[in-house]
Image (cartoon, rainbow, N blue to C red; front, side, top):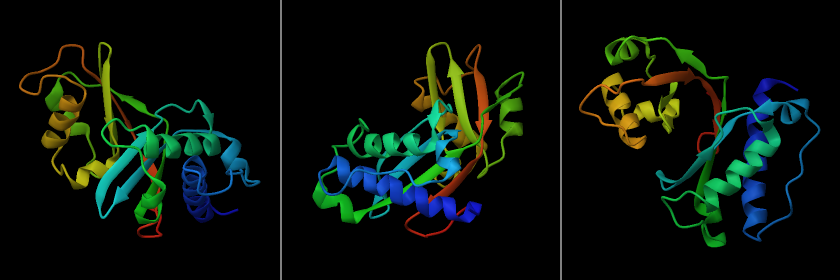
Length: 188
């Protein structure tokens, strides 16, 4: 199979998993495609009328990609603490996006200014770590926070870290994604 065919398979798998979990369809089954059985990390994002409705994912490749997409699709629909669980009535109004993450790479930086200088807007997803706190933004978040300074400040806030000063011991890792969306039917 060609890489361009992976997106529609993942989107169908995510929608089928959510529908089954809501009692609206059959159990999802993994097609015979070796890529679905290789370890992978994914995020599943749900939007409704352009607004975020749920987003859950994995940063580490700890299970086969197909299983990861199924688990994250169900979690995005039912376990995102920012939203009420999705209902069967909403299923037809929700748009699904699946992102497959590259392996994160740690970024070496002396201070936050040096970190900001190394970020590639609209390409890098970023994970911040400090002590037992961490948070991530997918590269798609750059559309809402287009400057590295705004992106980093919002990610620090999400992690519960102070935004008005440097954080001692701050660590960061970047990753890229391949993503597919039902809204566009396209791969980027």
